[in-house]
Length: 163
Image (cartoon, rainbow, N blue to C red; front, side, top):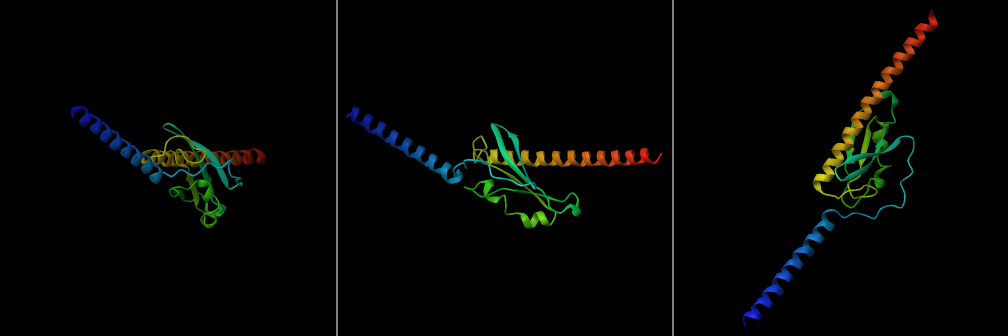
């Protein structure tokens, strides 16, 4: 009788654990349904810059869609987070209207999605978006500094020629 009870108890524990693991696995697939990785990177034009940002546990692919309006100077930057089960590849050509209005768009791939490494989670996605934003801000500052240096160089060159 005691042996039978222990066998039933063991079977019950195994069944409960199996159901719990099944729910956990299904939960990950529902919360983070990683689409298949494209066989190659998308073709990008001159207005799109592909880069990688470092994140804890890997690196994330990012695309900066530059403003197409040179007269607007340094315009705003939108950081776009795509939907669940999507890739940034799907969105590369969807922001032309914003780009024409002087707005740049940053698309950062979620960890574990597409060609990015890592494991998708709410925290890792937030870290990837933050790293992408910092990278874009650093690049904006570097480009602005380079532009100032080029302007100074042109002014200095112009003064030398007049003498």
